[in-house]
Length: 308
Length: 328
Image (cartoon, rainbow over all chains, first blue to last red; front, side, top):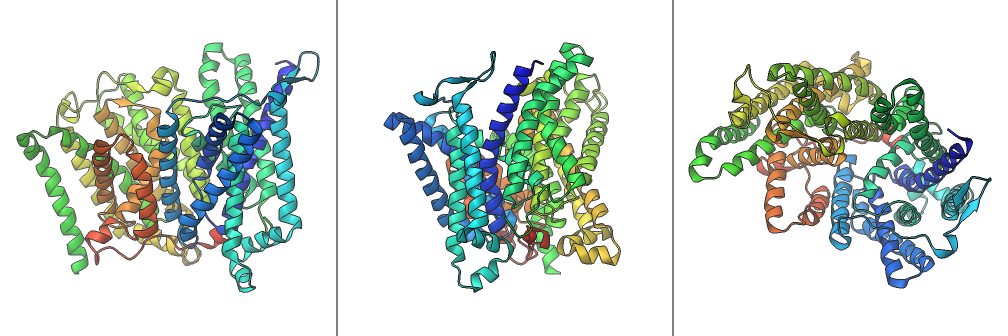
């Protein structure tokens, strides 16, 4: 494989990794702070993608669509929290799984009814449509660069919020001893609502920026939810830093693994064999990685020690 | 012991109705319902095995459908390779699923609580993607089988033969077996480990070994359901392993009532009926099914067997939150 291709794959991996981080961050926070397992997190990613598509059709402006989508994603998160999730915080995980599974089924079907079962596409905005000349042969789309930067920016903001601000302090405290935080006079319910809303918005944001890159379709959030689970298992549940590290590892590992593995197999085996076995092995790679990390560190790479 | 009598009465009634169905239904021209009943019974077999994990063992798996798919594919691939005897295919399905359960179980059981749930989910996805890339066996599209397994050359185990009775007998056997297992020393240790793993460990039981054994048994039972599903549908596809199927199994178990004798069976029938009835009204029946699940999760505690047998079901609707769950 040429160096150029390798570099492109690295950038793609980085881009996939930051996308995964946006999703995993909300998932891991919601779990870390509220002990709530939210399967519907992936479907909120899908909702973000559909929202940006719908608002783009409506307003004709990508920037306006992004802002409106984020607001709508936040609103949806808050509504779900108010009507469903709030009543499940103290309950066992099984009830939480059942309820959020129901929400997935509903929203996936709703998307199918409103937008049809086919895939939709949306073009990146005009001013981000070009590509940058990196080396002589290598051009990389501006839009993908911007998504990497946006992801990194969110990561920094999130990290600073959690470690440096009052809300962040409460989140960390709430993750360790919610009863004590409540006893000290903090409105835990409001805190939970904020965390949930932000988590939903982050997932929605991931959907928004992914929409011009991947196809928009019903159920698009289901598979990425599972990858996000893998990310937070590898990173350590409840840990933002862990989620960031693991998201980048998984993103790079998956993207590079697919190319390198098939090329590697072709060196040893005939092409027909490697084309058959390659994709199967490649899609198993991150699960094998997860299993390997679990054997060495069952709590994940950077487990949350009270600090989210 | 009124308790035992009532739940056994209910089960006896259900099984009696199921045995009567193939003789009565054709008389009133409702053979389609027989196919629905087979579907429900196959679902029930898999759900009973999942209930062994969740209800008895406290291990919430979200990847159980993978074992159904492994059973179905092991048998289908065996069939394609020229093995026709269903007993040999059964052995094959049990071997493959047992081995997979042993390996993934040993890894997944290093953790517990939510970690366990996510890891089983991930292993389930692994199987799903592996099946989609099995190009010689249909890949994404699945594999239509032109010849089905036989019982030493007899078609008694095929749709044209007595598949209904075969499935029913398997269900009865599985239900009885799991029930006996639950009452045995093994079952008691498993429940003790669910309620208090530390104490169980200190008494001198290896919690890990008991859980792993239960995991392997549950996986093998699910594979039996997969083998029969293949025999019934005459078709296998990766969607058998889709994680939504695992979710459905979870719904069945919770809906019916965790760790109850009749729960998995009632839940399976309920799900198939709901799907059929709602589906006949509107095509987008999932728009109703989804919110229905949310409402059930919010309000129905104890599941269907609680509603039918208010005294009979043990008052256990879920797992106590363990220290691992809270720690993170």
